[in-house]
Length: 46
Image (tube, rainbow, N blue to C red; front, side, top):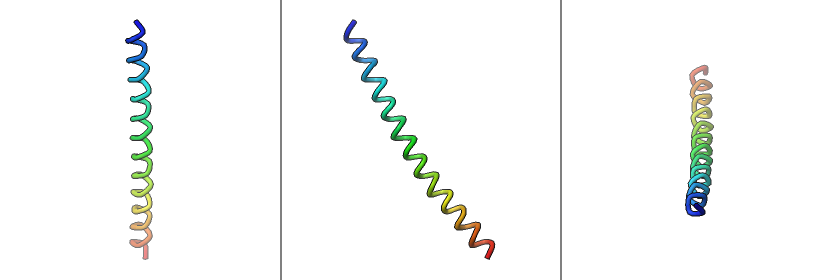
């Protein structure tokens, strides 16, 4: 029984870490996309 508890504990924390890493990656990519979008809109208005 202890094996299954350890397995699911490791699986949970690994999944949590992967989700956090993916969230940060998407967040940073979104910031760059928004910055590019705003720059393009500013240049187009000129």
